[in-house]
Amino acid sequence: MKNTLAISIAALFALLSPAAQSAGGHNTHSGHGAMHSAVEGGMVDGVVKKIDTAAGKVTVSHGPLTNLDMPAMTMVFRVKDATWLDQIQVGSKIRFVADNLNNALTIVRFELAK
Image (tube, rainbow, N blue to C red; front, side):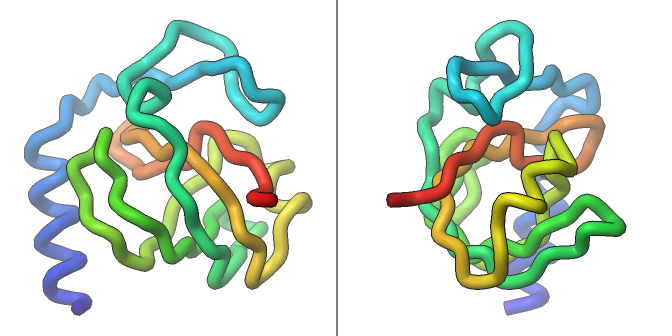
């Protein structure tokens, strides 16, 4: 699984432009700016597995990320806004949008799942 993940991530970075734009939306947990393909791709369900507040990262088990052409898996993401990490805990169910920002897979929008 780790080899598959490493290959998937390497392929992803090879396909994506290093000049990725930040995503924006209408959710209170989204940034400001132009709409981007990540937002158009829709939100994905996930479960928080680990939180690294100091690094601004979260590990999420998630469904397919269609905007990034990635299958369902568990992986580490940066978060666009570090204060979001205070709103979740291990085991939290979330819905989110991820994008490649500055060559880092980043959650750019999220909400707690109901």
